[in-house]
Image (cartoon, rainbow, N blue to C red):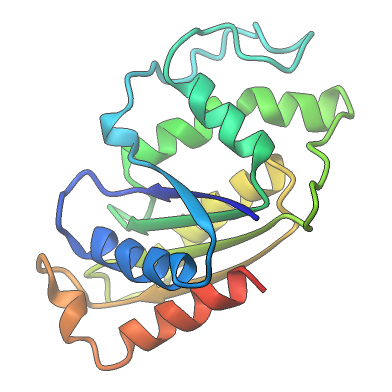
Length: 189
């Protein structure tokens, strides 16, 4: 089973990265490999809305997103770990999602969705943030849902951790580790 993960946070050693480490450890312990993308480390342009993908479903911009497109096409499972910034996903992960417009075109306009491989495509979204209101997580989750639908991931689970703001504070959450491990293991079932 091929798994692609995205760390949506630009902050190293922060809550999203800790959560991603917990999830990937559970997955790796079960014998699966994971390709992890950190959008803040990629060299890529945001979507230019140029229409270059409208005829082929392929983005005309040649940059690090080529690696992401390849992983998306080849993977069976997907994981996004991200903070919520101002009721949404951070700019770095949002830019990756926006660049998947080419895959949206391929699926919805050209009627060529990415086919399942040996496994039905499935996803997991784990969100964390200092927000006290669920609406911020709902907004970020809606963006992740649109992304997953565009890359032909029909099913995913979303879990969120509210009122977690300080760097590393997720470690003190009473059941975060067990929830993340459980969700990660559900992802690879």
